[in-house]
Amino acid sequence: MESPDEDLISMYQKIKDIDDTATPAVKALFGMLPEELKGLMEELGQKSYRAGQLAEALYRQRVTGFEEMTALPVALREELEAQGYGVGMPELVQTARSVDGTERYLVRLADGETVETVWMPDGDGGERGDGSEAAAEEEAAEGLEGNAGPRRDMRNVGALERNGYSRATICISSQVGCAVNCQFCLTAKLGIKRNLTAGEIAGQVAAVLNRHGVKIGRDRINLVFMGMGEPFLNSIRKFAEEPLRPKLALSLNASNDVVREQVMPITRKWNIAALLEAVQTLPLGKREWVTFEYVLLGGINDQPEHAREVLELLQGKKAKVNLIVWNPGPGIDYHQPKPEDVAVFQKLLIDGGLPAYIRRPRGRDIYAACGQLKRTVESSPAAGAALVEIAPAASPRG
Image (cartoon, rainbow, N blue to C red; front, side, top):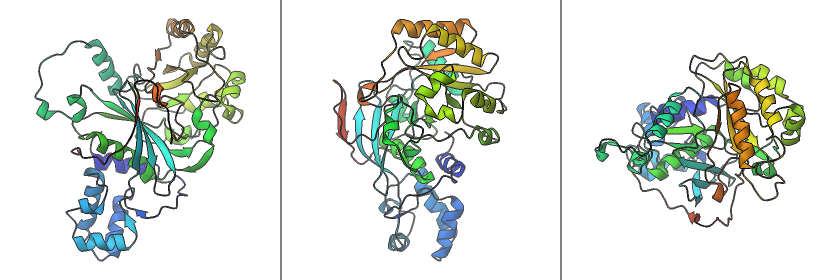
């Protein structure tokens, strides 16, 4: 991330057209764009520079209450509160901590709805082979594993490196529930309630950064929209027109339409051919690749003939495949593939000239892995995992 105000503002600028059906108890300041904050200050008879101070407090300092906005006059803070405004950052009300360091948060929104967000120190290997800067860093880190290197002045590093990590990934939710109904995913069982607002999406990031005392400019943070909900719903052609695009990862999950329709009913509307045709509209840069995510379901889509069909589908494309061993959940009638089948599947893809990587499962013991998010209010963590209430963050902010 470059600058917290630029990054968070640009994040919800891109998604400002998301339906806002929330009915919060307070009018949230977090999520308002600079021009909206300026308009609010003008309405209250304030100088325009107050909008900048307010944006600084919201997006750089990441405050959670008016009492922390010490640059603003007390009278202005009281007036904002009297007018029904609040900071409105989503609240982390519960966390489950995995044996591998992953944390899953139950996030309460202003209208009382909840979603889940995941923190993964060092990520899950999903960037490997995609030509990006993050991929190069990850591959270099793997090559240096076990090599401590020269001593660093720890006063000049961020919270992540101080704890032995080179970076972290935050997995963000975009909807309360999900409408896509993938049969292997726990989130699908929730159905869909509503889209999140721009501020609720960006607020998940800010709340998690606060919890871990992340310092922007010193700590490397990756953001992925792979939490609850489907942020895209196949709007790839619109995405292709954006001048600045995040990396694109698409859910393939089967090698033909017959199998894909069984596990992803949305295939009836957008089949594999339509998906690949839309991908072709992307003006990929020299170092830009498209990632296809493929959840391996034992006996369903994990056999050599399926791997050969994937090779045929993606032949000649600037693509890589992330193989995800299915993560189990209660009430989901699938089973994990055999390790030997996973190995054969990957080898067939690689031998056929298609880069293929097995994503490391993170937080599987606390239902934080891919396809396991389900707005958990109660949990029985596996041995070694922990379920705790969240205390207010006291760590220094970036």
